[in-house]
Structure formats: C-alpha cells, structure tokens
Amino acid sequence: MRIGELATATGATPRALRHYEEHGLISSSRAHNGYRVYDEAAVVRVRNIRHLLAAGLTLEDVSAFRACLDGDVSAAPPSERGLEIARERLAVLDARIAAQTAARDRLATALSSLSPEGALRRSPTRP
Image (cartoon, rainbow, N blue to C red; front, side, top):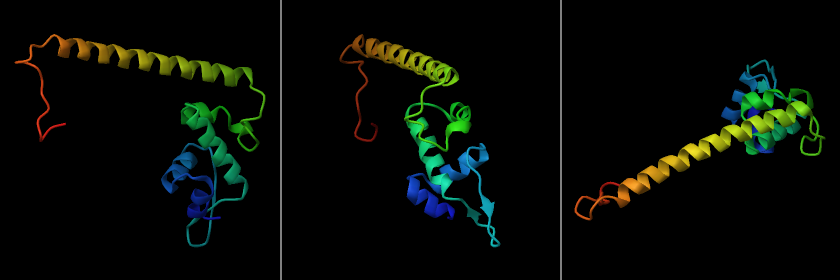
C-alpha cells in the first residue's frame, strides 16, 4: 500500500508516517516510480505507535518498544523497561505541569495586584 492508503487506514498523516520512518519505527520499499510502499503489517505497527504517542510517550520512548510494535501493545504485559520509561515520562510531564501552574499563579498574582487604573485590559485588536 502507498503512503496515502496507510495514512487513511491508520488516521496518521503522510508527514507523520515519513517522520516515523525517519526514526526507524516503520519501513517501506520503493516502487519503480519512487513511491513508498508499505506492507499490511505496517497498519498494526502505526496504530501501536499512535497508541503509545497518545498515552504521552515521545517517539524516542516508543523506539524502546520496537520489538513489540507488531502485536497488540495495549494487551501485552508490561516489561520492567516499559514501566521505567512510562514512569520517567510521567515525571517529566508532572514537572512541566508544576512549572506551568507556578507561572500561571505568578501571572494571576501580578494581575490581581494591579489597581483598576493600571490593570491590563483587552483591547478590540488584541486578545
């Protein structure tokens, strides 16, 4: 199947599929006209990649799961390495959330301390 067909079958964009290929997560052969050609197994692999990305992992994280991307990753028993990767990613996400919450709180405090005359106001031309 060509890249557009794989994209339709998996919900991924052709750009995302090329990106996955650049990272070695999927592979293709080339037709005589230079078009990428994927086998049917690529559908399962791409769906699994998208499942892991949707769970919050990065492409680098997903690379560690290459060996099991051709099966049902949602039903596979977790490995120690897989759990370690997930815990590390969760810690990164928690740190980002804490940093964003702190920034939000600082901005809210700054806005609440302004007098009505000095308060920042939305203008019709600026959001």
